[in-house]
Amino acid sequence: MLLFTPGPTPVPEFVRVAMAGETIHHRTPEFEAIFAETRELLFKLFNTDEVIMLASSGTGAMEAAVINLCNDTLLSVNSGKFGERFGKIAVASGLKNVEIKHDWDTPVTVEEIIAAVKENPSIDALAIQVSESAGGLRHPVEEIAKAVKEINPEIMVIADGITAVGVERIDVENIDCLIAGSQKALMLPPGLAILGLSNAAIEKVGSGKGYYLNLASEIKKQSQNTTAYTAATTLIIGLGAVLKHIDAGEGLGKLYCDTARRAKACRFALEAIGLHSYPQTPARSMTTIDDENASEIRKILKEDFGVNVAGGQDHLKGKIFRINQMGLIETYEIIGVVNAVELALAKLGRREFDGTASRVFTETYFKTMLEKSREK
Ligand SMILES: *Cc1c(COP(=O)(O)O)cnc(C)c1O
Image 1 (cartoon, helix red, strand yellow):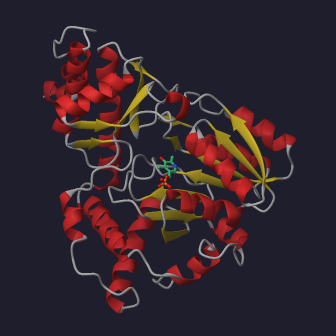
Image 2: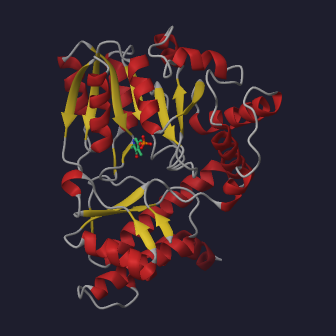
Image 3: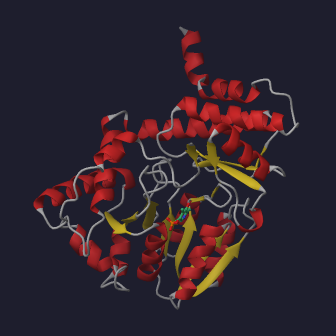
């Protein structure tokens, strides 16, 4: 079965092999050396002043960010399930919440954020997804962060990059906290979350809040290459392997470039066979299609072609399907996926199969290469 869900994503074989060794104790020089090396590589990925690894799913890092960086009112953006979650975390933590709500295909605008910040002087933190996975959209986070800081540099900007870190370069100049999760673009099993923090964020954390999710305890320990509680040793070893692999190859630039080309080629291929891309501003992490036959298409993909793609949640259940673009994906695999979608449409009697999807994918994906070779 080909796993093409936007989280969990497939774990490459070299990563599984790296994680197959015996369990090592976390309070040893051996593990501290691995931790230090992984931490160094994380700094390259995040470009932030500090990085913290937490043994939790992504939501744990979202909660850690909110409770440690917001003291009064959290402004959150609900264009999907994950944005909605930030608001729920704020309320559960006894904080006030101002929420900007949109359909799941609609990103928030810079103007809406500016208006909310000006209207509510008690807002001391903003939490937003870079890529909102519920509908596969990209929010203009960098522009928003810049605008917020221009109004009030004290407002903490928390960016959930769980389906963005490792997908594309994120400008962190005005971002105080950037969150990643192991099972999405980082190509690992679930269970590890990472927070990149600015110096301003470290200052606001102060002595921290909460107990397990108290970021002050982790900042103190992790700057000494250890963790406050038992580290997720196996996952950190895996993360080190992923980051070393990327670093030793053509680097992050190549990963970002391949992901962007793949996402674009996949969307063009599916649009060429009459499908509709759901989000107004598609994220590069996934291709999201809204379709009345979404459930049938997913079922055919799974049963006839062994391809597992994700559906929608809540009101989008049965109305969309989402194809992962994150991580190291072989080109022939994604070509197989778009071809299978075209075959599924043929099976449903919607169009005659003529190979358009794989042709358009190939043309789009290899376009720059074809142009270069023609110039020669
Ligand atoms: C997957 C995801 C999360 C976190 O989910 P967990 O199940 O807690 O790992 C948060 N935000 C986004 C955008 C996601 O895609």
